[in-house]
Length: 303
Length: 303
Image (cartoon, each protein chain N blue to C red):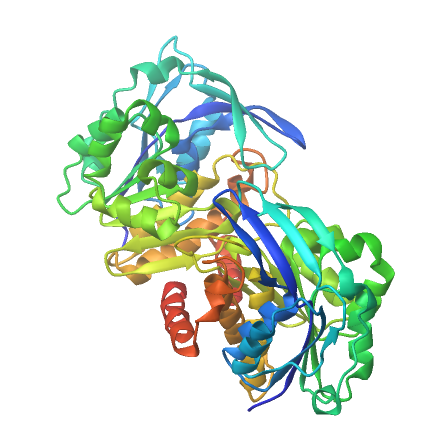
């Protein structure tokens, strides 16, 4: 199959500090990571986002070379691109936000074109739930499969809107601490069960370097993460995971439990390449062949 | 098969404080946990240890009822049993030792009887490497399979002796932080490779609630942990894990990669019951049937 993927998420500038080094100002954003990750497995995809005049044209070209349609990335004349600066703690998990400049993101009003409003897969990257909702409302495919990623910021600030989006999606992807915060449940499967009660038919809870779990009404699944040789920068790991999942599902004939499990493998391994370098550099030269090779190695660890 | 297991480890008093409660003075010790765990799967096993006059006779009887031979648990007249008091941090992983009274353990000189010196499986619980070594030296079965558990205390204080024991064993079981400390390697598989170079043919690295990995020259394996409903007391989790492994291997026809993987499942699930109550209470009434049921549930999460 060659289903279309519609991705919404930030296309942005990041600046990342870790105990081991600094990235300088580089490109990032959930939409960017998801798009690049998905593009390893399919070339029938588009990003809906917003950038300023300062976003480098060559990076848009890079996305296009990966088969990503960027027609719906609005470029605001005179505008500045969303910018985030963060610093990771010694554990390389927790991080502090140093600077957040929303810039053009404040006026982001996603508009889908007819080509991609009919996408079979819709991936809502971490963004204001109102924006995620606007994308859902313009999505016209009655059989679409909606994947949603979110984070604690929206739970703290826009919980009701977040819950209204969660209710409409097919698959929620969320990390373990956030699942705990959202549900008050410490046990990861109990947290998953409670999220299922909020509406989605499927949920994946991410545990970072400790893997992920999947849950629906009939199935439970646990997947470790690939033990990377050198963790350079965790930024984008969750987005790459989601992008790998969407990329795999876009090529599948249906979305059953087997396909979900295989998709999680692809998400996991895509994320493993992502964290081995700063920003998108771990994914920039990655191809499907190299990804497949690691998927096979990883599978041999699991059985 | 019904191979014999020889276990050495402390049979002791523990007092455990967690953020959620206190155990009071209860029985514990690596030998106790390992013995009870192994006894779920086999009744051909013995513990070599030392206790004082204060150790309750009814708990020795309990071990006997579980099929555990206690003839080699030396009772020192007028002596006091080893006592440890510890307090877990909020994360229920890290803990501080409040009190350690070695008592009779200071003079522990293990003496194997002929019945169990020929055991096919020898499990060296966490103890002074000199004691572990003394047990190896008395073990007479040329085809014995030696499993060793250890901890950072021995790395800090008796590293050379520890390394001389590691060299002689078939399987080292160690937790992730300790593997890192022992090898200087952050990547868990790299740490495992370095441990293999120290002599043992097999190594298992435990990651607590995040599961465990296995490594030999040909194979790598990753196993998540069972997500327990309620973590009450992590004490003995590692010992129960090792005991479950030994118990399973004792009943296997050979010790190949398939058997090791199955044994790790049993170890993981035995530990999951252990941590659901204080001390050995999570294991006291556990039987093979209940254990098997959880093993089957857990297997369904993995494939």
